[in-house]
Amino acid sequence: MSTEVLEAMGMLEALRVTELRSLLSRMGRNKSGLKKDLTERVVHLLHNECSFELLFAVQELHNLRQVSKDARRSSRASPVETISMPERVLAGKPGSLTVVSKEQQMIQLPFYQTLETVLPPTPLVPVFGGPLQNSDFRFHLSSSQQAQIQNAQSPSGSMSVQVVLRICYSESIGVEEDQYPANISVSVNHTNCPVQCSYSSSKPGTEPSRPCRPIDVTPLLWVSFTNRFSVTWGNFGKRYSVAVYLVRVVSSQELLTQLRSTSVESLELCRQRVCEKLNSDKENEITTTGLQVSLMCPLAKMRMSVACRARGCAHLQCFDASFYLQMNERKPRWTCPVCHKYAPFDALCIDSLMCEALESSGEDVEEIEYLSDSSWKPVRRDRSNKESALHPPKHMGNHSQVDSSVVDLTQGSSDDEDLLNEEMVSTHLEDKKVHFRKSGTIKTPRSKRRSRTIN
Ligand SMILES: [Zn+2]
Ligand SMILES: [Zn+2]
Image 1 (cartoon, protein in one colour):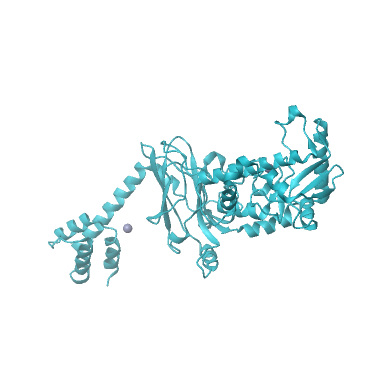
Image 2 (spheres, rainbow, N blue to C red):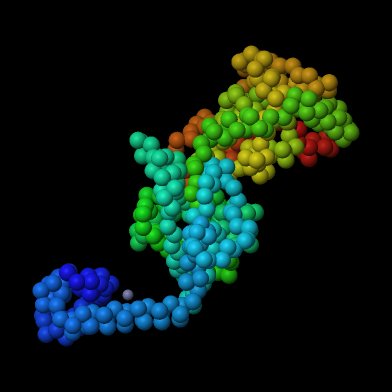
């Protein structure tokens, strides 16, 4: 077969039905049938009755195709701009300029370790008149990236190395967490890619509620071909950027190990903190002989194993690090269960004084009291007395139900359910405050009773 015929066969693949029909009619052949039949007929002609006229006709149609494609490109300048090749490909091109610029990165997420940037943050540019926009991108996986994905595949099918797509506000790249645009939908290589998101209202322009997790596109990728993906989004005046990263998924267990090795507050610092807390309460004219804290995790309703709190928290009460990390692995809210402030992974620290108390007190001890010299003693209580103090009758109705729903990590839940759970956790804590005050060790002046929070 001649080179010309081979070239013509290649060009044939890109032709549309109408073009194939015009080609066949020009050659005086039957132009009816499906695209498959039409292509077959032209291929047969090329193989058996190849003429200069046929080759010329194919070439002509091919050229026309290119011209119209180029015309469409120049009239829609922005989508071409948004198609940006990975840095490494650009840099590796011989003769191309080496662009020295600090690559913008999205914020690091505890559960995703960025291994490589596949597509750096690239703006979503509105092209159409209405709110609904569509932006196309493409990228190619390098052979080392392909190998990293394949080597990480476990027999169970779960992937610890993934290619993820992330979207955030253009102006907050590297500062804020991800935010999907309104009306988001994603397709990868022409296949719909599910995006898990929930909306707080159906009002046009409403963005999906945070957390907006990285979208795993790995199962839809073509390993050795160029991958195309398309983001449909609502343009309501905000600017977003999309990026693709090769990441390693980090487990809550790994994060716990990391926390234990890098973020432990020393005994000395912990004692200092207790002293300061007790002294500041004195300055505020509150007669304080000691401070009681619970050894039970307010989230898990179980004795803590690793006691931690966030650096920004003003309270001495801790929560269980392992349980907190597991909850955030399921839904990364990073909210302190005690004071409801933002408590991201980087801000967590383990309280060694509390851990010491957990280790050296009996399993039956559920509370300790910090004394003004920063020592502590276990608080033992009569069981029946404690039950009535911890569970005032007005909350009796929903306690058993609350305990099970808060602890159960296996069940997925909606935003509303989670909010409800948080409410219930705080209700529990309020119960404990009531309990602390009733114990008589902390005497709060009547005027300050409602405004002070002691824990
Ligand atoms: Zn060509
Ligand atoms: Zn807190």
